[in-house]
Amino acid sequence: MDTKRTLGRTGIEVSALGFGCWAIGGEWQSADGQPLGWGKVDDEESVRAIRRALDLGVTFFDTADTYGAGHSERVLGRALGKRRADVVVATKWGNVFDEETRTLTGADDSPRYARRALTASLRRLDTDYVDLYQLHLSDADPERAAELRDVCEKFVSEGLIRAYAWSTDDPSRAAVFARGEHCAAVQHRANVLQDAPEMFALCEELGLAGINRSPLAMGLLSGKRETGQALEAGDIRSRPPRWLEGFEGGSGADPEWVARVEALKDVLTSDGRTLAQGSLAWLWARSPHAVPIPGFRSVAQAEENAGASAKGPLTAGQMSEVERILGR
Image (cartoon, rainbow, N blue to C red; front, top):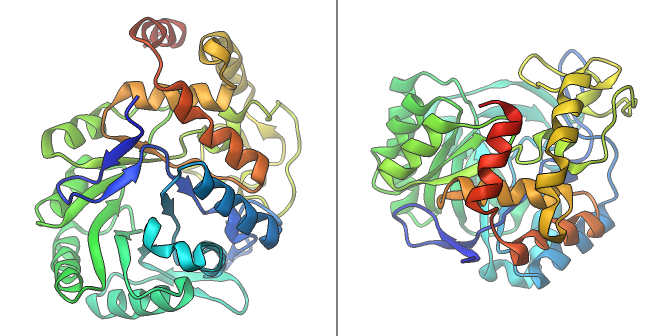
């Protein structure tokens, strides 16, 4: 398979597999104590994992200012160091947080805040530009978003960012940003259990990259989650918010979801793949615009995810078999 992708109409080239940096931000929370991270994390292991990914050909890293209340950006910036120019860095803005207490405190969709947030992200990432700057408020007002798109165009002209995108699961909202000259992508949820046909069609029609968050369904497609398996207290999946499907509060993975994963196991692990690698292979077969960004917290996970590229996308026959199993 072609192991490279171009971010929309920008000419910015990335590896077909990106790495999502939410989990390496460590623990953080909402104002009412809801965990928003993936539990405790070892920063030194995170740094080693990022550098290992670089050695294995991964050139695209996606983070957000709010992950770990700034911590993910700091860890990523440190890990990249002198290799910053070799990679494409994406981050996001729109959420307001307190770094000291690692708490999400609100949201701000004002143009003034966009500039403040970008300045702070550049400092934490230890860089003078962001390759892809993404609006992190999935349901922001489309009229306000059009203003923010124009603000992003200004950031491009100032050399602060190279391109921009919206992280949203609403195709009509994504289309608002796509009207901008330097809009390169939309970040949206997609995995073998949660297809996104409208969004894939939009990417095809408008020439956008589809950056796929939750490509492993929040870990369900890693093959390591079982029904009734408790999660640590600082893990968002231990008290799943309304939008997080596939997990039940306090009791781990939803049995129905686990059963679906089990049913898919044989086809996804064909040709010597792990379950996670097969899930990434499904996304590459699903769309030539797909750039999945699985999360990671260890060198071993980085190696497993990066290893998916060598095995390429699923075949047409395997894709049909997945649809048959899921009854779609």
